[in-house]
Length: 194
Image (cartoon, rainbow, N blue to C red; front, side, top):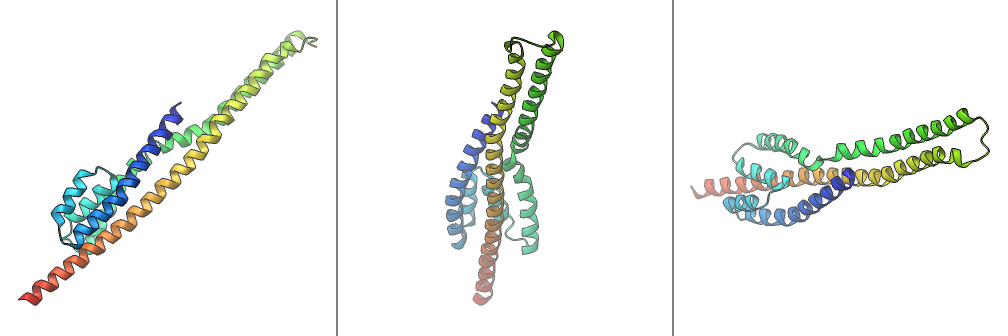
């Protein structure tokens, strides 16, 4: 149940920020190319995602030298990563523990079956062993039934988060280049006007 809640929450969260961030980046890029920094900041404020936070920090630090901008954004990205990775370690733990709990049930069920054999010796009625064997099989199946889909979703979500982090890094680099190209053009225009 906990795994299902984590999976659903993460899927919805990642879907929301992925869709929003494509649109957000296009709008902010357009504002930056036109030199409308306040408009770009306003767009960031309207979207509460890790990406908009990074863009806002980049825009607010546009006057800094490029190497400082990159360092500031790298530090900010490190602070945003936990929001993307939220719940994934719990999901990984559930996927690891589920088969072990199934194995534990297998062991206890087998012990119960052998306990019946030890208590009564040769058993003429197989139903006396059935509950122990049944427990062993049910817990094994239960552990596998939980683990397999959780492992699949865990790997999917980890790959998705890694992709988003890579996209964030690429877009932040693009942002720094846009800001510096715009600043360079403004500075060049200012010096030519004088």
